[in-house]
Length: 326
Length: 311
Image (cartoon, rainbow over the protein chains, first blue to last red):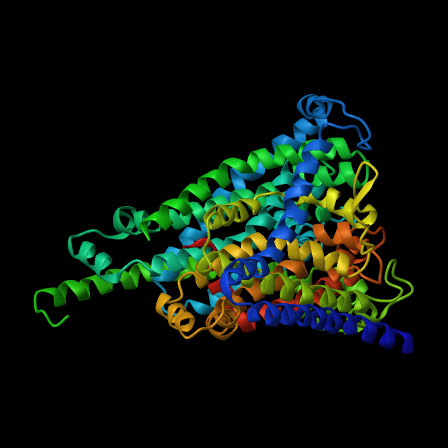
């Protein structure tokens, strides 16, 4: 127990040490750079304020991304160039086909479910008086890690041998409905949808909260005016409310597509990518860190990047348009 | 609404609203209950003993109440009979704190500086830099992990010339703070830029007329005014780092010295022979702090999310 405390005090000491050094260095630089007057004042300010961020971004994202492009044309240990061999493997390997199909299933299904359900809840919340408790509870899974969520849901999906009592919620419900529960997580392709349910459970609250804020931001007099004109219910929503939250809806949808494309933790924790549930993010990790094939892992990372790029282009065009209006 | 013509319409409208709000409330509460049950079931189970968890579903626990804290004791402080748990998860919990605090403070400090420079020290090319930084959000972490790990362990070389010496921080806390800081910057700069660029222009100009340098303006005016945005993003980043698996798996290995609790939980799930009582309690220890942060600071967290998604 004694060593436990001394280890932890040393660890906590590292927090204070790191933060103290960080701010001491910043403080000294700020003090010195702040004393400079004249024509160097502005360039120096830019260098000091923007420099650290640019340095970290170039070192941490730009250069590694370029290196990954290079790695994707090299062999497993990155020692010699192999041309498009890794990409040919991506295009022809049957295992990768199932990985890509699963990934496409994920981006085809989960964004629709999370954003759709989130929108429905946001509309209904708008009509409720006491919305804070349900809102907080539906939003709560956002604070839980995907790993934690996976444990929670493994427990729901738990399956026991027919001779033993079923303690999983899903198995029990299915049995009460008169069916025989199966070993959920091992049953392909059903297991893919069970994993997606976890994602929906975590992310719907996010969509709901954002869309709820957007709906509340629709000016009340517009809604009242069209209600007086006889619009009601679905018509009111379709003609007035939805057009006004459309841009938010699209942003949330795009965020969901990107999140589900990059999804790693749920698959890693629930199945490790086995039983026909593998997705691209998990396969990248497996290629690099368990099969030690840097070339193939990098080629897959590039594929992932290419899949995300259209959304990026769309988002940038959106921001530019909004900025030019503002 | 004192107009006599409108008044009856309004009350008719109120009647319709009352009806549909009942349906709305029913749907919302149904989803709320569905959404809460899985977590609640795990919470109940974490207080049941091994045999009860094996014998019956958690919902039966209320008819034969028999609860225990033993699971939490063995998960926190160790249990030599449970695989992978001889020292408990407490060291990993401490690691998570040690990883998270600097991994929140560093990127936010650096991003606030950069956001101010891009918004108020404008120069030729500052717009392009802003868009380029925004675009970096989309680089999948998987693309950066391998080269970055090599940089940490081997340095960077051009032929025989060493450009960057090996940093020697792989497997140390600094080796996790640094990638988290790097990966957080694009979103942090974007969000904080949104906020800081909307501060009143007169304020900045008045300060400059009084002879204040950019550093003085940054510290005396921008930092205090940007506190709500900084708080909002801090919570966001806290949850992100605490809940991260990929970065931690890559840079922290799995050891008790540096690995965070989320990695430990993931390895317990994968461990042969891990039993439910361990996983239930372990999961709750892992998610306890984020849940406390979430429920107590939810308002700020929502504000941060909104700033990011709706602009």
